[in-house]
Length: 158
Image (cartoon, rainbow, N blue to C red; front, side, top):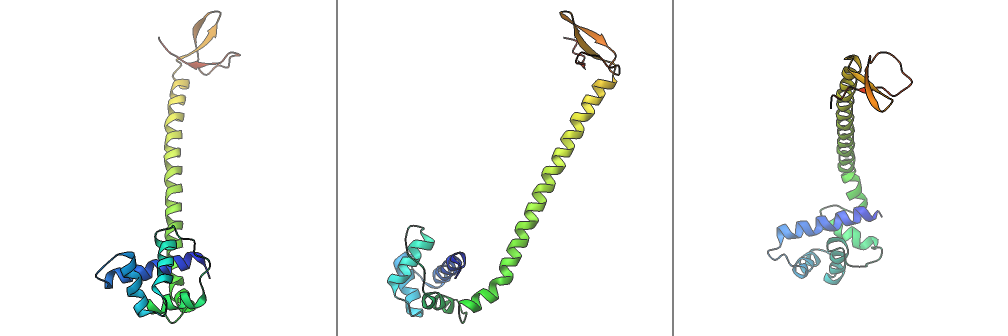
């Protein structure tokens, strides 16, 4: 049994109990669920600690425990739960994939725009015949389209 699914089942069990039970303490919820399942409230407390509070150290769950929880959620068994919730997982994965594609496309678009802006500025400086090279202790104005052995940089009048 998949640990992620078991956590999902436990969360759904306690969410359902919160909607049905007037008291929302851990103990009250566990007793409430125990009344509708073949599980003890102590077992449910350990599940609550591990999956809800993230502080318990319960080992692997028995098939009986998981099937009882699924029964409380109106499924005939764990297999029935998995079968009926498989579509939900596929839809979640599609949403994640769509978000990934959207984010990558957005980053690519921003990068392309920035590249074009900076490239246009560099070309404007290079084609504006306003360039200079370092010669003997000072910068000298030169034609931007001519090749020089020195590094040609855009003109800085300062």
